[in-house]
Length: 231
Image 1 (cartoon, rainbow, N blue to C red):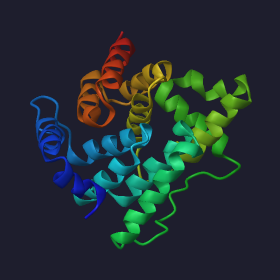
Image 2 (image 1 turned 90 degrees about the vertical axis):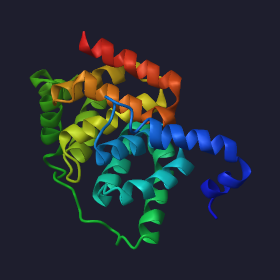
Image 3 (image 1 turned 180 degrees about the vertical axis):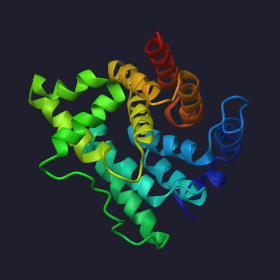
């Protein structure tokens, strides 16, 4: 019996209410539903963002059972390194590899790299421009951190296969919403999502679906950021 299953024995009344809310009421709320793969992509990103390692392990298996592709999972974990740093993201890579191995998913997965060390800056800046506007194509010239942001965050990760650009902006939104304290960046990436066709209503559904995993304060903050991004 794993730790999650044991809670049905030690805390049955709590688990009955939690599971009803998280696994029935929230996913089926009228007007707030998402496709299963999208919902699980957002949930996994939010669990990484809030440091929910044990919950991530449990929900990862559910996500794979629901049809979320292993490559999409791995790409979510890889991109988390830019938004949470190695110190918080690394444990989730280990958990993912362990779950994949237990399920017989061969590692390593197919290489999703789409840039070289020579063109990562150019292609990263191009991805920034596609999301945030043409003015971002030269934003890297403002300083070395801006250059790293373009070459590393966007050039090394956003350009990879396994997830499309809209999905990458979605998981970034979830990383930022879940970790809290990143409201300026959350507003910017809410706008980025909208620029790629994920409107305020969609982002509101995303927040609804991740609420059981990140709590009410950060969910309400995220809704405020969506509103500000829409103004």
